[in-house]
Length: 320
Image (cartoon, rainbow, N blue to C red; front, side, top):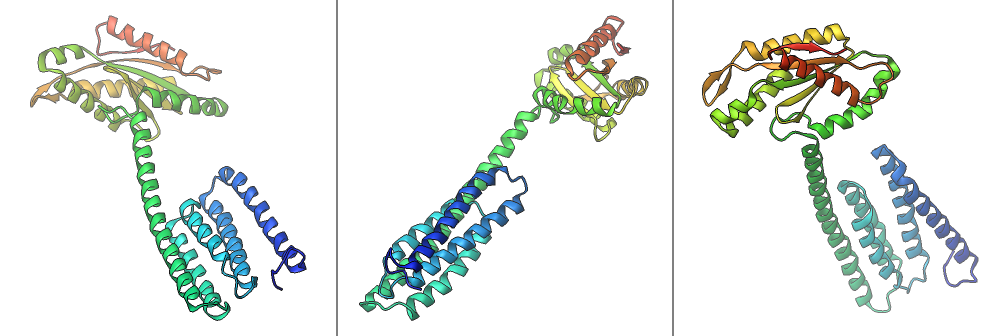
């Protein structure tokens, strides 16, 4: 089998192999974004790489022994692979190790160079290409890791209240949209609490905004310690917080609200190294059957909260 010309049957068979490889490549690049499992995606990519590597080596071996033009294509292909194929860095290294030995064997023991300079130049170009392409791959992977880390931090910051470290309004509403439909399907009871720190403005006026910020963070930590792992706790803004208690009926939710109220008022907070007693008002409601959005429940809990404020604060009021 020799690839001498377009009339050669061997040449036509090789063109058929390349065509199948191109078809697989098109299918892979269409299918790859739809593959959720990274290991499965890596498997398809490795198969693609092995097929391409086999075709590359077969092309080098079956060309006329004095023909060296294909090495230009190999240099381009290797550079494109290392800089463009999304595989882990260690697998790039494995591919380089698998490519070099057969390539050098073909170069030294199969090719017939018109001049010895051909062999030495090709050796230099191949080794330099693989080495520089791997270095580029390392740099690109470093950039990708840095970009991924920045994206992860940005996403976490977008979901987190910077002052207290708990979920912010945006994250809470996204959670509610995703989870409430599931609770409805399972017919699981859900209780919603709305909390507001009593007389918080006086803390800012008396001790300053930094002390008020520290108090908000300490308040959030104390509430969080009394909640279950799967309860949802978020700061909606200012001194107003929300707690969602999945798989918790209204009676149990009210009991939890009383425990949270007592946790806040029974132990003073340290504000500028001085103990300060604080209280919280809480409105309680339940998620009604058929409610797929949290807005109506928040309005009822907020009405309960303002009823607690009107009745003297440091209270729990129910709005069923």
